[in-house]
Image (cartoon, rainbow, N blue to C red; front, side):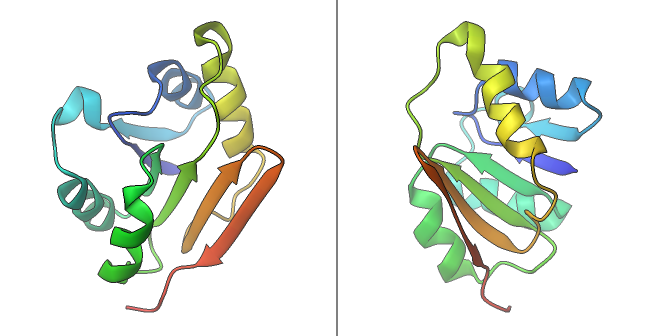
Length: 119
């Protein structure tokens, strides 16, 4: 899968996803300090699924009417211990392959998915 990890996304999770064969760009490496709207614009331009812990992306994503070629996965979980973060978060993402075209919220006890509005 093609992901764009927001700056607040754990580096260990990025590394685990890359090791599993996923194509992951990381804002912290490529454009630290980039604003939320610019991050979302990059996800759209590059047709990637945005991975973030930032709740602001919910409102921004639906206002922007993202195209179906991208998606957003918002984590609303307490951050796992650093030694567990990469494997735990990557395992949640790898369980599914239907992130494209969705706004997903992963939270304690489950996950909600909602189709992105048509552009």
